[in-house]
Structures are given as C-alpha cells and as structure tokens.
Length: 384
Figure 1 (cartoon, one colour):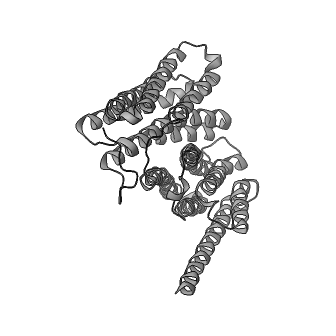
Figure 2 (cartoon, one colour):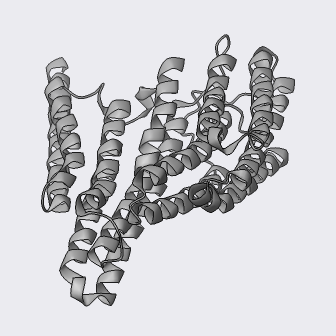
C-alpha cells in the first residue's frame, strides 16, 4: 500500500468512491426526512439537535475514508472489500437514524458507526506495514480509532441523561485523532482529488433539495386549491438550490488546501456546508406542509427551516472557498446578502424575498468573476 502521488495529473474520483458516496447519502436522506417530520411538528430544537448528531457520525466516517483514499487508494481486492464493509455499516447506521432522532435510542446507530470505523483500523495497519516513513502516523491513526470505537460501545451503558454530553466528548476525541496523528509527519493528499470529492458529495446533497422542489410540483397537481402557493415554493426552492450550486462552484477549490492547517479548516468546515445542504430539503418539505395545512408550525418558523440552511450554506461556502479570492467590497456584499436570506423568514413573502437576494448574490459573484477575467486579460496584453 504505497502512498499515492499528490501531484498526479488528471486524478479523479474512482467508481468505488462514487459508489461509497451514494451509499452514505442514504443516511443523510433519512436523517433529513426525520428532520422534516420534527420541524413540521414544531419540534425544531430537538429535531435539529438530533439531526446534527446523526450527520456528525455520517460526515466523520465519510471524511476519514475520503482523506485516507487520497493518500493510499490501492483499489485492490482487499481495499475494495474493506470499503464495502464500511458501506454496510453506513446502511446499519441509516436503519438506526429513526430511533436515534425520534426516541433518543442510539444503539443501532452506534453499532453501524463502529462497523463503519473498524475497517479503517485495518486500512491504517496495512499502511503502517507498507510505508516505513509513515508508520508512526498510521499506527497512531489505528490505535486512536480503535480506542474511540471501544468508548462508543461503552457509551451505550451510560445513563440516558448524559447522552448528549458524552456524544460531544467522544466526537471531540474523534476529531482530535487526525490532529495528533499528523502532527509530526503528514500523509500526502491530492488537492484536486480532495476538493472534487467534497464537491461531488455536496452536489448529491443539493440534489436532495431539487427532489424536494419536484415534490412541491407533484403536490400542486394533487392539491389544486393550494396551487399558487405550491408553485411559489417550487420555483423559489429551485432558485435557492440553483444559487447554492452556483455559489459553491463559483471558483476552483484546490487552492483552498495548501497546508495541513488549511486542509483541517476545509475538511472540518465542510460539516456546516453538508449539514445545511441536507437540511434545506427538509425545509422545502416543511414549506409544502404549511401550504397544504399539514404542519403544526408558524409561518415564520416554517420559512426559517428553509432560509436559515441556505444562509448557513452560503456563509460556509464563502468562508471556505471564496473569501480569499474576492475583493473586500465583494466579500461584504456577499456576506450581507447571505445573512439577509436567512433573515427573510421574518418578513412577508419570505421565499420570494430570499430568491431575489439569491439572484442578487449570484449577479455580484458573476460581476466579480468578469472583473477578474478582464484584469487578467489586461495584464496579459501589457506583458506582451
């Protein structure tokens, strides 16, 4: 298991990685569905809290595999087998999202999480046996992951009252493992490959929101009495979703990870982006329920379940990929418009207002990109 070349040209996601993403997004989709049910019943705080806990587990297992694969993807039969075992754990975790989010029972979800993580121990041990100069790093990963899995199992016997606190403590331990392991000698990563992997997973999550907008159109056919309101939800939902896609892919991301510190910020910071993208589909479904009188939630709260995730997604994307390439004025305008989208839940016609703000934000981004292009052309002309 030799390290991959971090400067390998034209490296792209493998079919196995794409398969891996599709399996993992099942867990995100189910957690979004349970979030929708909780928000529609006006249990927003508890629903969002449970959703974030479930998504943390899914995101962390996905991210660990992704960064390991960029360094050591050998794509042989043993590597594939261990990856498929991780996928099986993701399916078990998905089966446990309902009981975790509605009843606070994390037993099945914990077992699925452990099944996802234990193959990584075998992967890191194999790397330790194969690569002498990275042996210490790989062993720290293997030992750290093994210890954390034993603690997750032990957590099942703790009193229910300390469930949230123990979860946060153990997740903090999980987050600390890479920082400790990579402190002295770092594993190689391929910037274009890593950023493509994050982009593809983000795209899949955004696709969930497109499906939710399609549901609004379908419901409008079945509930003709609510036709105008549902069409507004569908159109505004599509505009907001398309705006999120446009913003995320407005610039190249590979220059965002140039050091170990920046890679941590990029990798860990994407939790906000993933969580917001997954929550948006739930918000669109809540808006549909409100318009068809199927939800027990106020109009402002219902609008916030849609506009706040969009705002957080935009702010997260700006902080991770756009902030360092935009001018100061453009940065201020982008942040202001993103915040206004979140606050639009407080005003009448919140979804159309949010959609207008999104269109304005995209216009600003495109104007900035055209200005940058013209500057480069002028500089090239002057050099000639």
